[in-house]
Image (cartoon, rainbow, N blue to C red; front, side):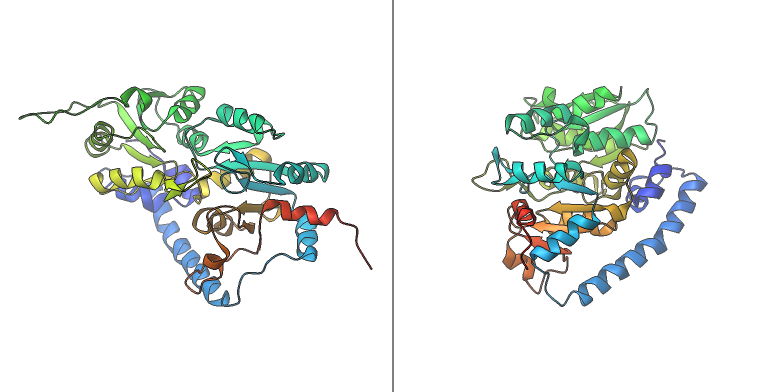
Length: 358
């Protein structure tokens, strides 16, 4: 069995793995971590309830004073990309100037995305193509998070990863020296349901990684299902469970949650999520850049991933209304996830460059 206990105990993912390892002997360390995690999870749930009740006051739109205070106390900004930096293939107005201003102020910038279709190298090309001054080491994609997670649990070199997803995941697995199958190579494979049809699967697969896949098909779903259900200890890993994504700037498109949902339904198991809002991604970023949580502000356009990611990690949070979330949704009585502040777009921070008037 592949033990994920060390990282999961730190990242808050232990209960998820419990669903994946029923009937498999579990190490004592895992059981201890699971017992320790339970009260922590209950405390977190209580904290979120208190937040929701205390949050009866509406979220506050950032004033000029709020923006200056934010910039004074924050050393690092973690930005979601889709809906904050760009929409589809178009940069959001004012973003390049805002990023340059923050760099001039000495701020550390990190760019995170739940979109796993590209590797970090692929995203660097996108940033550069859009005229944005970003370094490769500042990019953190969910494709990289999946590979980093497998590396962190010392995924056995003799095991393989079955990929439901695109080339971004494969490129990141290659950089970690992890064997993989599936991905784009299975895009055109079909299942002919003739009498007695039996689909063979690879018994050396120790993990299935599910990322956004524009070529999802029944063959991939069945292969992933067989590996998870029939290979002892096989992990079910999701880069994210986003309901929708911005593939173009014209409309929202079905997100990776639809791919993950298909395999969750066929296996009756919950995935280990390594992208936002999972704790693993934040742990890895903070360690990589040597940051303390109180130094960081999470900037995003989604309440249930970006803002929740920041809140669960103890970060300052700022919502941009330039993406998925509207002001009406944010201020709705049904919404219980409230950012520390919100702005129309990231460019709103440029207001601090205005001279202070008496």
